[in-house]
Image (cartoon, rainbow, N blue to C red; front, side, top):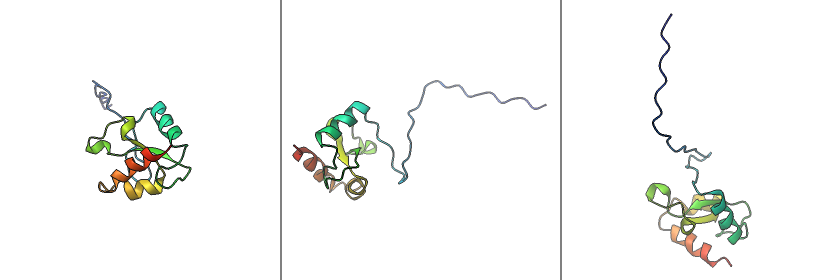
Length: 101
């Protein structure tokens, strides 16, 4: 009979990063922060006013963007695709978010 391989030691837990259908990393904002951001925007995309929104990083985590409210914006999937990957257009996300009353 073959020996059973040993389980590797887990010295610390690594953060779990999931992928969405478009292969972007999921956001790491807290649930309470996401709720605040959505409420401030009246549950609408800050750019096109669509009603199905997710809270996204304005400056991506991979580029040093923090998981803080100042770096969060409610965006529909379409606007996130158009503006999120373009550093030049990202400034419009923050401007539009801050215009919401």
